[in-house]
Length: 93
Image 1: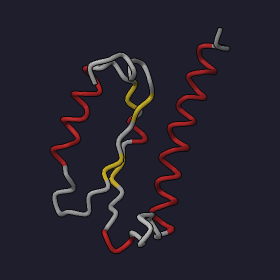
Image 2: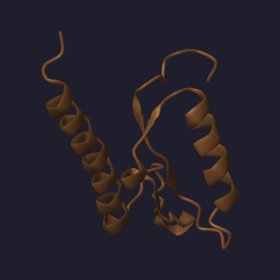
Image 3: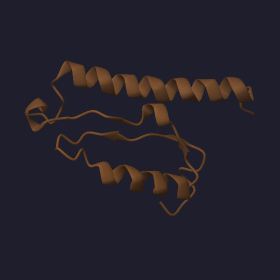
Image 4: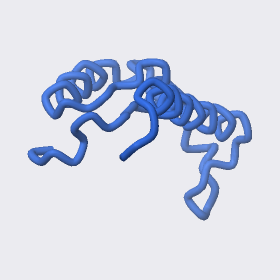
């Protein structure tokens, strides 16, 4: 996190915690770090998608279709954010 790799790059967090607290304290910490490195936080893509252990297959992949659909929606949100920025700034040179 000490480099410029994330500077002005679109980022988001997905909270996968299935715990009762939903790892709520982690969100503020992530926001601080993301701000420190100058990344572009895509708020609409920051979501809580609980992933209980029972939804993870023996291969380590999420088997639950609704969870996979929610993750795909997050990725679409980030892609749309990037596309809108490209439209606003014109073609890259």
